[in-house]
Length: 616
Image (cartoon, rainbow, N blue to C red; front, side, top):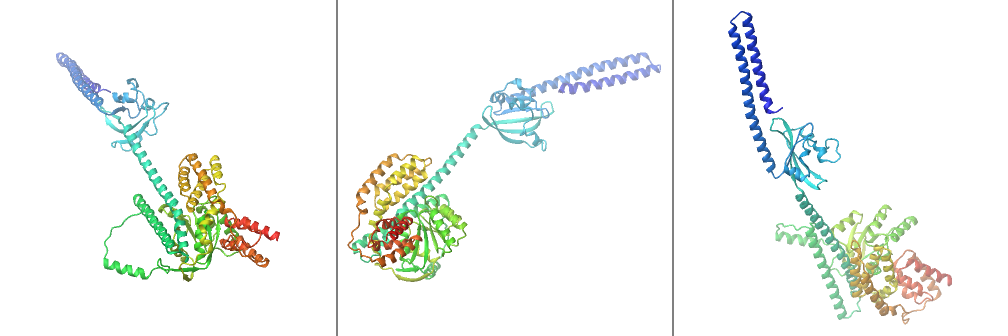
């Protein structure tokens, strides 16, 4: 009902009622026999009053209608001039009552859509009110506006919508929505979020890079520091050689300190390490330092006496040179060791001991990066067997996140590569009893230690005859994990035998292989092949028979005893079998057996030993 009708009808009704009342009164007067003229005057007055009221009502309603039109025009001008979209609908029927031009333009509608329901106009194929319509919320609290966001797939834009109930120009309640185009803001926010995600990925990549570089640099440092320590034990060293070895060891430790500093900076940047600023008393600090020095560990870094332990250790390690460094250090402190070249072999050895009822190992050293089964999986398998043996992670990756990962996986402790003898001794002392000390003065080097570098080069030539072909084969089969393991091992071993160009090339090739997705390494394979050929030519002569000047002959009885002792060691995969190599040279037909022992191929060595026994 319009404003004109709301004013005009009541006034007309009032006038009509008044006229009827006067007419009734006139009839009553007439029936009573009163003056007829008076009756006529009353009727005339009623008719005039009726006409006057009608005209007055019409005049007033016309004035009001003009004001309403003026107000509506002002309202329309205001709504049209607003920098937002406006839509007005009826509350119950959802029919569109009003749309400003911006709303029509932005949503590609027309004025012909006025009168239709909002949902059939704005939502293709809709048959009822939208499930997300804010009217359901306004029913609970009609005075509180509702603000929400919506993506319109038809125009591919984002909108923020403020919905509320208001009184319309004609006085009845309507549903009005003020709509803002926030597409640009959404796109900017998406760009910011993408940039943030990229930054997070880049930071993770940096952390992974630092972890990888730490691992790659620490691996050769492990051999440099380890072998320099072993070499310095030789009392036969002249002063100049000793000075050079000490310089090598000092420089390697200096480089290790630089790597640790870089990692510390990275930890600070990532929030994994913090500096705490706090006041302290110098005098109190001096007393505390003195007390801590007095309570220092049994094994002191400045103590030249080497501790002696008793026990047997299982070493999970695929790298031959790392095996050799660790077993030599363990041998010097009285510990026998067995080697497993990967997680599968190591777990099988432990299972076999459980089945046989044999004594369990006192300690396990676990390399984290191995083929077939890595250190974390092997640790999990050991824990499943309910074996109560400490597991020491032996790894060059000592980033905080990695150490936490190892700890959560069940590793007891981590010994970082490279390690110094003192670090190893302290680690061992936490799990094994120190039975005594021997002088650590130089002079305890074995004959094998003196020839170690030559032995390593012999190992390299013997064990890398098919490495290039294996890498090419793995890449063709798209087995990038195997290719990475092969290249990683090649890189480490090249560093051990001082072949820098091969080491650098393999390092770059490895970086290409671990990228996601792996990048082609064809150009590096050419260099790797060339360098391997040079090494084969340079060190191939080491595979020839060694001089027999210092070989002592062994009689048949002694040979049988030696082979029996050696068989037991080989069955237990005990690296002490290496000490028999010189003696075996005095026994006929042991060339293949010696080669298998030098290659740490315990199974092959057992087969070779059995053939020797059968033939003799």
